[in-house]
Length: 246
Image 1 (cartoon, rainbow, N blue to C red):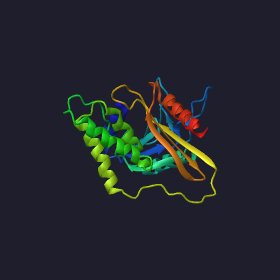
Image 2 (cartoon, helix red, strand yellow):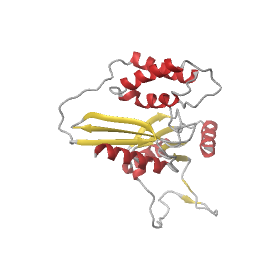
Image 3 (tube, one colour):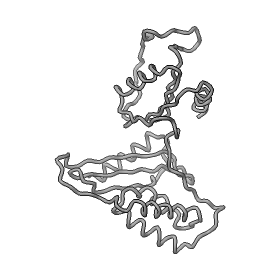
Image 4 (cartoon, rainbow, N blue to C red):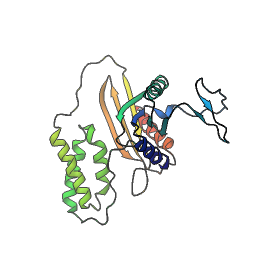
């Protein structure tokens, strides 16, 4: 993150526009085992330093897992960087930099300093949300998080549950639509974060399965063990998704 802050400082100083991209299926693009040698591309100038360094104007590309920042003083070069990325990877253009890394979900921990709330009331509320999540995929993650505090609910957890209710009130029609499709008979998609739990640093996985293009099963849950890397967390999510398919 030090590198990120340095780049943000340079961009602010030089009034550079910060653009953000997200690489889809980033973990399918693994490192090569063999050594690779290359020549400096045309137009670049080599620098005499201990480490290899080449320059062409000022364009910076910073990568953190699958989140990318592009900035600099050459608009044409920044556009070319985006085009080259798009030819190699499926990227999502997120526009002007807003959040980096691209994490918008607030984290909820034990909150021992918060006031205690009525346990039975909290359990009834979360239980109903769990039941509702059987037809509302969009609240599966949030319900999975707040259900972890049934034994000792605090004011912070209750407010998080109320936020789910507020979201449901504002989006009452986001149910499941079943329709005739000519797609593959059975599909599954998985995803995972890394060390998201503030209590034990376990990761959260999610998967969903489609039958003939219709969503039939899904789940969001905290992993049973502590993953030692982002890749391990992703592989565990894939394993869960495959088990659901089988």
